[in-house]
Image 1: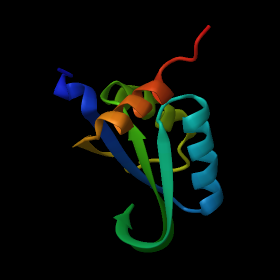
Image 2: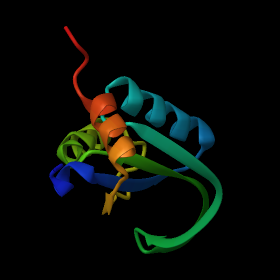
Image 3: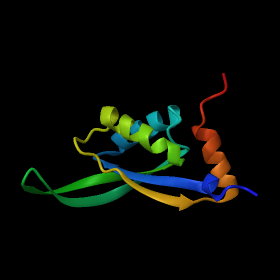
Length: 113
């Protein structure tokens, strides 16, 4: 019987200001095996307060699928690569199907030597 924690997947969301920024982050995340999948969603308008000013900005949402052990590595990656001073980093733990969980673990594992 499989340990149910092996089916856990993290869905981490962040936003960036352009599709190009989102694509660049997504490629780097996948190339570095920090996640199995990154989905980009265009068409968001965000309202927020930044440095005392009310702001309205077009944004692109990234939904990053990784294994629980990848959270710290992604936070470190964001510190050096995310274009925002204070990037959104929201984490939701989800239960994946056995096949999707196995695929995600395979894609986030270090490549064979």
